[in-house]
Amino acid sequence: MASAPNRFGRIKWHEVIFLSAGDRRFITNPAVAGQSGGAADDAMPTRKTIDEKLSALDALAAEGDPSTQLARIQDTLDDWHYRVVAKATRLAADGLFYEAVPNLMAAYPRFLEQPGKRDSNCLAKKAIVRALVDLECNDTAFFLAGLRYRQQEPVWGGVIDTAVEVRCSCAMGLVATGYARALVELTALFHDPEAEARAGDCLWQSARSRVVAAVQSLCR
Image 1: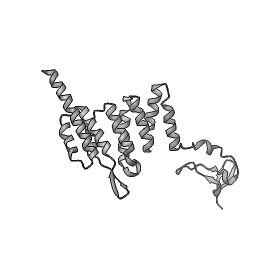
Image 2: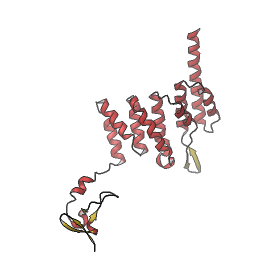
Image 3: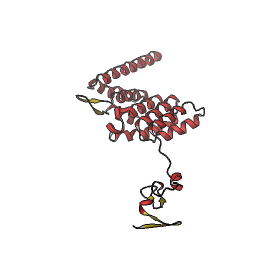
Image 4: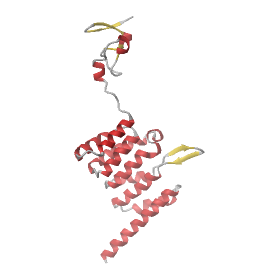
């Protein structure tokens, strides 16, 4: 059997493990050679499970230093798991971390790819959009795109649109930006096939009307 050179002599190929797919360093496999992992153990940190990441975010809520909270939240928003990102997003909104808005905007598109698998029930997208509304994001184009977003997911007997709350939150956000054509855009929700979306639109049309009436009364 062929073997590889190393500073201790020669190691047989079946006793070798690699640190990564492109790694060319030879490390003795402790399961085969019966030796300590040594450098391999140090070079391969254990990946955290989803539950461990969520627990870490629970602990972060008790962190007294806002700058530490913000840094951890921003790092976690780079995660690919929708539950982890959704929880970090809620922490950002609860803590009013306006500095996290660019991170939230950057995280959102990741969950548009293979959405049924990567963001079941729109969990991450719903949290992100609602947080952007709470954090006073004024990106009109983002909210306009969200008004048209739909995500069909299979259920027993058919499919269901899980993006209703995304559209409703985008309606809130669009109105809050002061976009001149917000009411025109929101009228599309009157024809939304989902009753929940139509109800959300009516609420925000009503709220907008009350704000306009109040402003007009002050200007008289």
